[in-house]
Length: 462
Image (cartoon, rainbow, N blue to C red):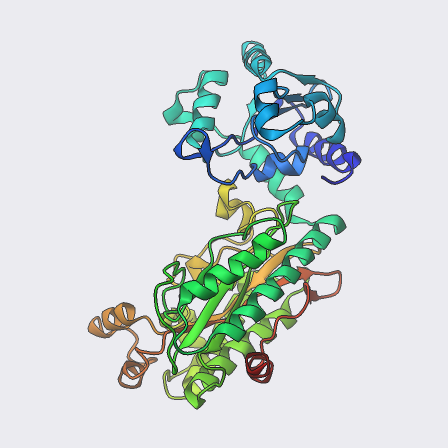
C-alpha cells in the first residue's frame, strides 16, 4: 500500500466531486475455479484499491459524503483460517493503513446501506462486473439484480474517471516498475524466437518471469506467429522461418499497476525485405504518434495521423493507392489497421474500461465514431498531463476480412487487392509502448524495449 494519507486525500477529492449521498465500493471476493476452496488468483477491484488500497478479499468500503466519514467493513481472520493462512492483520489495522478508523464486521454493511436507503439518501455505486456483487447490491439496496447495472451512478463514474485518469507520481513509478519487468519478458521472448520452438515454450517462459517478480502478468499473454489475429491466446504453433512473432504481454506489480508492451520480431532473428518494409511503416507511425502526444491534443487526431502514415507507407509499396487523406477519411486503411491507436493504462491494463469506454475515452467535445477502424479507438479525447496511455499501431493481413472486402468490391480505388492477395500468409505486426503525457510533451516509460530493426536483430543474435 501507499502511505495512508494517499487514500485519505483520494477519498476527500471524491467527496468534493459527488457533493451528497453515500458512495458504496464493494471489494472483490474469491472466485472458485472448480470448487470453493480452489480459487483463481485473487484480484481486488481496482477502484476499491484506488480509494482504500487493501488487497484482500471480503471487504467493502463506504464513503459518506454528507457526514464526511469513511467506513471499512470486513471480518477478522478466525483461528481456523490462521491455521491455513497464518496470522493476518485485523480489520482495524487494515483501516488505519487506509487512513480511516471506523471499521465494522462485514455483517454491519447491510444495515449501513439500508439505513441510507430508508432515509432516501443517494447510494452511488459503479457498474458491477461480478455476479456475486450484483447479488450483494440487490440485497443491500433492494434493486432487482436484473436492474442493478441500470441504476449505476453516472456522477460517480465521471468523478472516478476524473481522479484516476491523472496519475500521481507514485503511480507512475509503479507503472515504470511494471514496464521494466516487461523489458525482461520481451527481450527473453526475442532471444527464444527461433525455428522449431513452440509458442507455448516462450509464452510459459515469459509468464514465469512475471511470476518470478512476485506477481502475475497484467493480462493473458498474446504470443503468436498468427499476428493477424489481434488477441490470439493460442500457443500451439511451432515457429518457422519466414514468419513474424507478435508478443503482447505485460507485468502487474504488487500494487496492481500494469504494463502493456508489444513487439513483433522475425522468427530466426533476421528481417526479410518484405518484413522489414512493413515493420518500418508501423515503427514510423509509432514514433510520429509519440512525438504528437502532448497535453491538449485529441488522441483521435493522433490516431488519424498514424493511420495516414500507415496508408502512405502501404501506398509506397503498392498495397494501397489514391489520395491518402481521402482513403483515411473513408476508412479504407482499416483493412490493414482495424483497431484504435491505444488506450488508457494504470490499475487496469485497459484503465477503467469496466466503467464504460465512452466515459473514459470520450467526452462532450469528442464522440466515438461509427466508422470501421476509428470506432475501435478506445481513447479519443484531448490528452492531459498525467495520462498514461498505450501507443500501438499495427498492420495486419486478415484473410477473411480481405476476402470479404474484395468480394464486396469495397474501396477498389484505394486498395490493390491483387498485390494484397500475395500477403495473406504474412500475419501481422504491432509495436506498442507505454507513454506518459508530460507538461510539455510525452515520455516513453521504463527501460526501452528494443524496437528498431537493428536493435531487434542485435538482441536476437545475442
